[in-house]
Length: 204
Image (cartoon, rainbow, N blue to C red; front, side, top):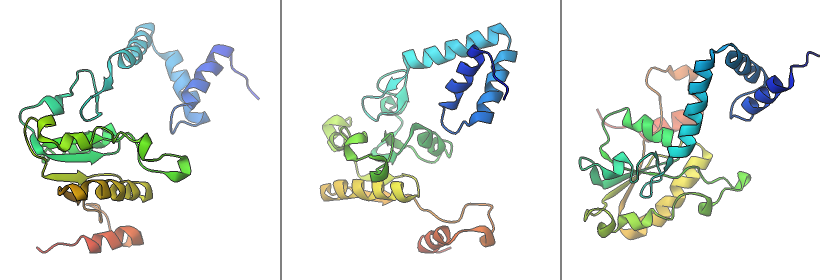
């Protein structure tokens, strides 16, 4: 078996620690770095260091940001009566790309998963309930909370748990619709997705 020099092996091992990166991918990444010009490597290192130095959690919504509060929470153009709850910051980005939602966000940084030992205390829920008080929301009363957790077992469990927390407060709680993805064919859709599509049907 071919053995690499120790620095190369260490770099491959570090890449393997990244989510979704196996041994083959880690080797390709390591050798790509070896072929990069020194200046590109320095920029890569600087980007890694800067993101660790400057990125923090927004004290209001838990989004990743370099200013506190983040640009969504501090914006005067957002609808403060609506809060959309997502699992991860990249879910927030996906919703923003639609350019149709103008409310605020709350990022959980995970979902409930008893198998992985993740309970309610492990999610960023502590500062959620306080946001419903108008004095903590620029004097605006929150009228609707949108649960945009992932459409899987963990996401559903998380949505149900949060719904039970919020509904007694008299706030409207909605769940994003799920079903047929645009551009897909019926013959390739699994039964769970089809069931959701039928349940979420609407009049045209």
